[in-house]
Image 1: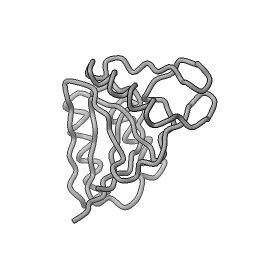
Image 2: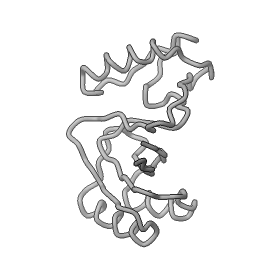
Image 3: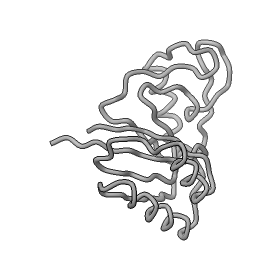
Length: 147
């Protein structure tokens, strides 16, 4: 059996909203989505993946595709430090970036806080996103995942 999730994370991987904001966000989202909504905060930063949707990773500075083995080595090195250091030197252009800022096809990211909505079938509208960002006090990004 396969499942689809909409994952919503802060753009800042270290950001975790306070409990009151999390409760308000869950109530807000419960009015929009009928699937199971879980809010999770972890002690360490985690890679928030796109499941079966992963295709490639490209440089956010020059746009060139990054060799998967190079990216995996950088991920492994960062993972050993619990993703505390997401610094990344792009092999294509030599620019310093962050693993969080690379262009993932399909989108992915890093976070200590994630909202997971099972069986969501559409993004929030721009207005709904703006309201959710106000409730949580941060800019957000969407990650669609299929397992």
